[in-house]
Length: 352
Image (cartoon, rainbow, N blue to C red; front, side):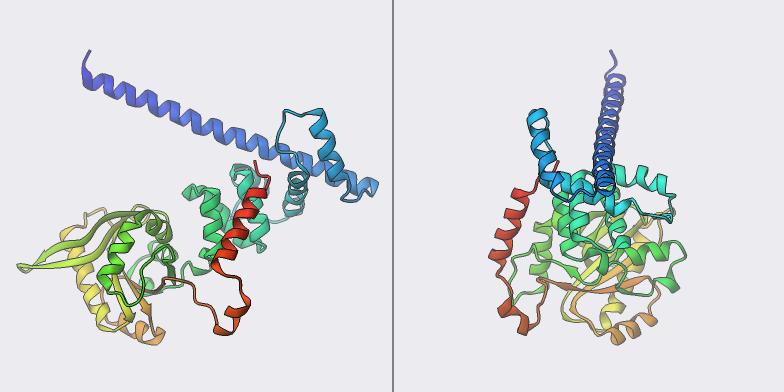
């Protein structure tokens, strides 16, 4: 038996099994979502036809528990969630996310896990924003906890807000994709670094927490190196962080700066991007993108600084914690209070 042929066979069989497992999981989820929709619809119709109040839900929950004791997921809370689920999506009239309504329900709603639906309904009231989180969940494979974190950190509001020169230095659709990939600000509240710190310490801490850092950067970033060495003109230069973006098909150079943005940062980034394009970029790659992360930027200064550079660059702030107005702090609960309350909420939530 030739080993290479056997190894290839094993790989193919394993891939087919995994493919079937994924399809089975999606099919099971779609069936469950469809069942919950039907149950919510039944309750809604009976309430409308018979004038029943919300009191029918606890009675149903009790009777279902007695008659189907082995079946879980039909508590009073979850039956209420099914009814709310139907109310949220039954009156849609226009296409959603460029999909006809039947396709939107089939491709998106039916593939979102039930626990995710509950979080989205409870936490995201704006419909277009909710659809965006749905799409990101499917695209990135976000768990329920990650989805909750993304909503809490206002990821939707931060997308596409960085100062860039992409429109003049990248062609469409690359320029729009690149713009929507960057955020402003970036939130690094998973770090334990304290003031005063230097840029190298920030860099070290981000690499220590690389999984959370990649999560904050967003889908598609592949980490290539820290203090990545480039040799130009017989001299060594070192990039703070180098990534390759799988969706944009380009290298991404990230420079970390403490304090305010300075115009000379753009010139240095221009040099790094040009060097990466010359030394690392392949013919099939798109132009290298630079991202300058600083604690504070003056928007006008940042826009002026980008006018003279020849490579696509974005400028964003980063925050180690979300700042709160001083006058609100005394009236707000402590971090410990919030964490305790959240843990109680998730512990007591009946999600399937």
